[in-house]
Length: 387
Image 1 (cartoon, rainbow, N blue to C red):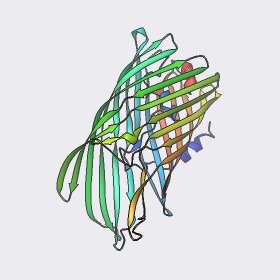
Image 2 (cartoon, one colour):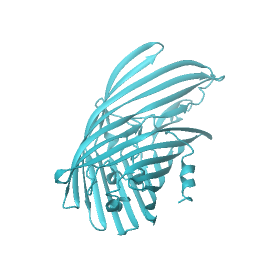
Image 3 (cartoon, rainbow, N blue to C red):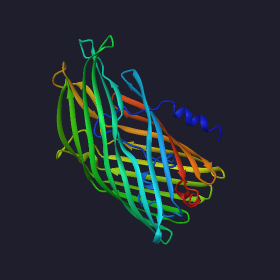
Image 4 (tube, rainbow, N blue to C red):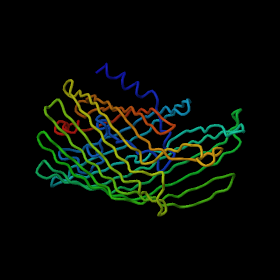
């Protein structure tokens, strides 16, 4: 175990965001559970699936925080950004008739970025754009276990959040000569249903979230004046599935996939060119080195739902520049473990090291997530999910 800790520390040296977060609603937030993150982050096998808890003998909770870092590369230049913040909270309370009350709070979109533009041609100016914020979901739901092998559940999500973008123009000497602020507030309602089946060796789970409309209130603060406007962003459905295989008590496999047909996102009833369908797949395994001391390893691939912009020479006018859209793809390696806490549960660690690529821009990102989990009564029975 002592040999594993330096690997997590290396992954956590940069705490941060993504340079691709400036478009759409920002980056899709990762699963807020270090155990699941270490297996590749399959959503269907996490608390984000309201039907995941087939076995629950007593109240349980999970509290997570994470840091993330990104090193961007463009045109031979590099820049490191980062931050640390809470990731989420999940709780489940057993009720009569094998029902469960589900409560939670987690982040759905991250909108943190810190980007410098190239100097404007023939001037000493360049732009500095700083973004902070995100969209979160307050969750409440119910699930029911049947025959100790099937669980079905549903939950209501209230989405809320805000973001603030500071746009500054800086001269070469470092003094700001202009500053504008764009602020936004987000609100929406969503529903999600899910189910899981657990056998002796094989398990499967799935969830479905119908489409939803997010109301956005924009405030533009420019040179002392304030402008107010509203937009509606329509997100299509999200579908996820996962499976697990437990050949022995000390070794298990897990895999998952999510699909979002978000090329059909509507902004005020109109589609936008820079949205695309998003697909994510993951696979991982866990092995128990000693009693309650597991190691987890996973891999994931993801297509982002937003594209990155890059400039190109106009085909008809060589002296002009046009802006084009490039898909963003991500490959990531995941690693995790747990430190048992007697008569309580565990402190779980999960890390993700990802490489994101688009034409003209690439970044290497790392996340370190810590989860305090109270699961003493049911940890053994849910190990087929990597627990």
